[in-house]
Length: 387
Image (cartoon, rainbow, N blue to C red; front, side, top):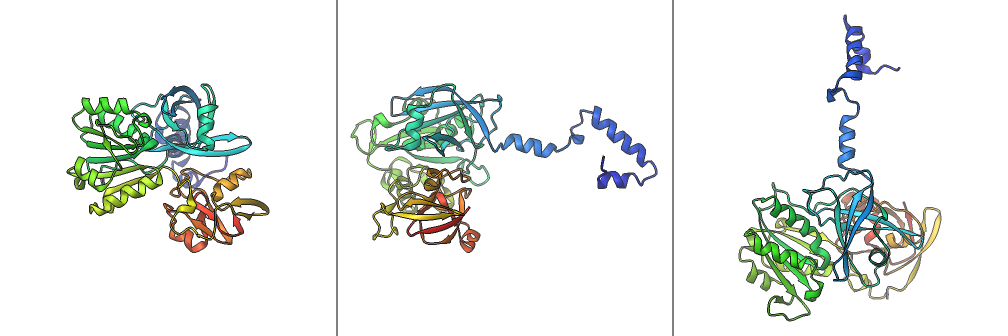
């Protein structure tokens, strides 16, 4: 066996051969972890698995146009995660291999299963597949838990304001289940915006928790329905000041559709809440990018452009992201958040112009060398990109 530097140096000592022999015996017989090869890599790889093999163990119909999926591991091990993080589930639908990130709504204090809640999206390619096709026993592949939308006790206040919209309630369920069951010393107020009461996911559980725990208050806000038992309208600065008197003492966490996300953040800023006290989780990109400020008014979104990808030519519509166009043409791109934050789906823009949607977190190095996030890039001309 080829000797390493350590073995070579030890061999030059007076009792070097004896020392090397003792090390060899200990490696074979001792339980001392110090002599285990690649211990750090083995531990890290187990905690941060790049790929999870999951099985659908249970499906719960909420009867609110959404289903709860409980996923277990094929090898009986699920990595730990921070409450608020998500997993990216991969599926193949009609020959198209794609993925969607879903927040884990179960508590990190138990890892018998991961729970994700998937609501139906109008014309949703993946959500419809999960709600109509996926059944108990089906196998899925996912990335390991990811995301920075979680509590950090060094930087965040123990007093929190959770602001959720629609299915954006899911990461907050994980946070609340951990905080309340473990009796953490944290105070939480939740403002949950939904069109109507029938759309409010986890409403019964949230109502029960609010009545049971003194450190949690829950307010449902209905935008389309007038109900004397709940607030009506949008989660505006007026509503925040009415329901949360000490909002400026709290770290605010926002999760929901992009329009709601931007609206709430702007209202918090108008209340002079510092940006460092606002944490956002972008739940999805704008469904109608042509309505975003800055998108060329000369385009309708229906234009189709030629995109050269390495040595291959594909078609892409102006109103669909490059990532979707690539997946539709069976071109695999590494991906995780699909919201312009994680940067895994970066591609190099060689020629042409793209519109970069709001919410993208592009590094200065990417800007300098021409890299874009394909999940948030929309073609405005014919393009050439490099994977």
